Structures are given as structure tokens and as C-alpha cells.
Length: 255
Image (tube, rainbow, N blue to C red; front, side, top):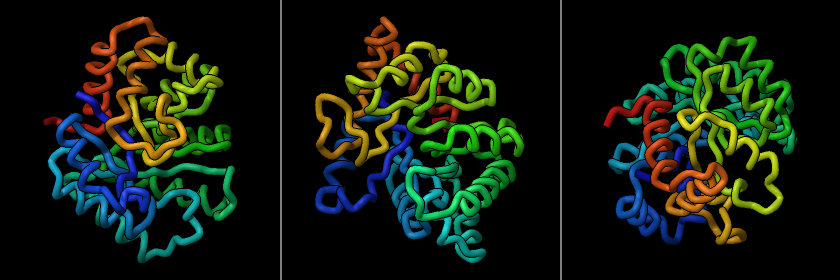
């Protein structure tokens, strides 16, 4: 019942052994959501999801790529978003760590994603890197709680987590919760209600201990689940069951 709620297995780091990675998903996992970040990526991830039973898709234009926006590109993403195996809109949000796109470009694109999610009644997949205040402000102003969604790779404080939960979002944690210096993330893992917690890899990035420094892949999400169980003082099976049910509910997957 492992459910990796945020993966990028179409990344070039998987070009040499992608089928083997997919085989491991089919053998060892329940489901994953693969996330598209640009137009080509979105086309490929929808095609992959339609081919593979255990893979679903989310589509959007990553905030770092907001400078690539055109009306034609956006129309194509909107069309892809309507496909049945597309279960999320994004990843979208704000990223102030990189400066490929200006904050203004990112904010305009973020609002477009929120509007699309509302129109299609599909959850948002939020990317928030060093932009907590502006991310929350836009979500509030645009009434994103009407669709809610997933705060991917949550990196905020316990106080921010409470705000996010009140806004109808689930909190997804990945490899960083296993890192030695992950004080804030560990605190969040301990306080989030078990029925609002998700696990993810964000592969090929954020590889959990004991594989930190190597390429991440969906099957390694089990190490995040094991660490969360340790933090919360509950069994691995309880974390597995809860995050499986939560992910299916968050993404409105009925199988």
C-alpha cells in the first residue's frame, strides 16, 4: 500500500533504467502520482499514466518555468488536465530560491493554476520554496480552500502547517524528514493529524537516509514512512494504511 504522492520518473536521471524503475513500482508499490513540470513533461507523464495502471499524473507549469508561459502552451496544459488519469493540478506555486522567473511571473501563473483547479475540481499540488508568506497569501486571496490539495515537500514550521491544514490541504513529507538536521520537519511529522499526512519521494531528488546522496526512486518512500512511524511512536503499518487512504482521498482516486 505504498503511495508515492509526488514523483518525477521521466527525469533524465531515469533514462537508462526507467523500465526497471517502473517494474519495481509494479512489484513493490500501490500507486504513484508522476508530476509534469513543463509542456513536454506533461504530455509524457499523461501518456505514461494512461499506459501504466499504477501511475497517475499531475500536470502544470513549474514556477521556475513561468517565463516560458504562452497562451498556446497554457491551452495545451488545460486540455491535458481534463484527461481522466490526471488527478492533480501542478506542481504550481512560488520558488524564490531560483530566479529563472520573476516573482510577478510566478504569481500570475500560480493564480491561473488555482483557477484551473477550481474549474476542473481537481486538487492543487503546491510547490513552495522560500516563499511561504506569498504562497499563503495567494492561496487565501484566491480561495484555494475550495479545492484544497497537497503541500508537496512541506518545509514550513508547525505554525505554518496549522494554517495549511485549516486551508483544506494535506501535508506531504519526503526524504528530508530522515535527515539528521531536520528539526522543523520532524516537528511537523509529529503534529500533523494522521488523516492529513502524505508521503512522497520527489524523486530523483530528496533521497532518504540511508540512501542519501544517491538517486531517489518511488520504492524508497518506505524509508520516509518508517521514519514517520518512529517519530510518532506508531507502527509502520499504521503509517502505510493512513497515508494510502489519505492519498486516495486527496487525489480523489476510487480504485
